[in-house]
Length: 282
Image (cartoon, rainbow, N blue to C red; front, side):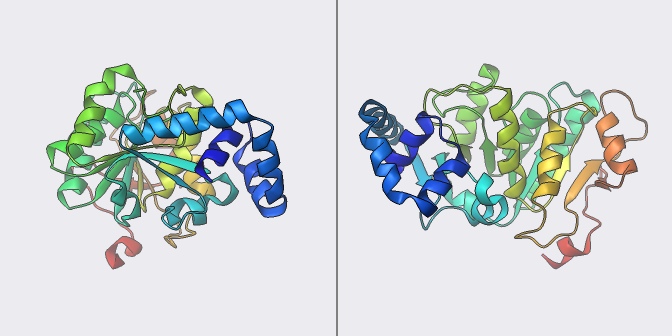
């Protein structure tokens, strides 16, 4: 089914449309594929190339498809996920997502680094998005602590986005981490795909920590998804945290907004702890 699902994706079918075909018109899939022989051959070629590069692809109906995606995301779950590295990490239930803006200030970058370093030292898997800024510093803090990383990206795994993080991506794999994408080889990141990957970042973990971001920021999409898909597996009433700052400005105005409107709970990056009874029970 991998080739057929990828063929449908290459033809422009959405996740929901594919799930509808599987649920109601399974014979229709074979009919579509038969009428799109060139695209089907391309799908087989892409999957073959990915396999040669050590990439493992899982479809939604496979037994080893991660429950976090299937149960939390529902029809928004990716039909296919492509994994490079230690795929066992996606089944861990002690992940922490640490995210923030690309154009963070020095304190925001320190927050991302030290939070990731602290929780990785405690044995948690750190989830982030391989973007510049806070994501990069979160990955670096985790690696420096000898921890494991899941980096969720918005391009095919033959492309590094941004290019500046190619060596970081290679180091993540070398040190036993995982790069995950819902995009096959050859697909470049774009704004829509960057937003879409946020939903996967937040459902893989219990706490989601916003290190620093302005109100108008891509990080806020992740916060929205964390609220939208809250608690189906973890059972938390609120698992979103935002770093608390002594003063606020354009760089961290998103943190101020989240805290003032009680959309997130405060966390101190210098002495990080989770003031939440659910975490104590974990």
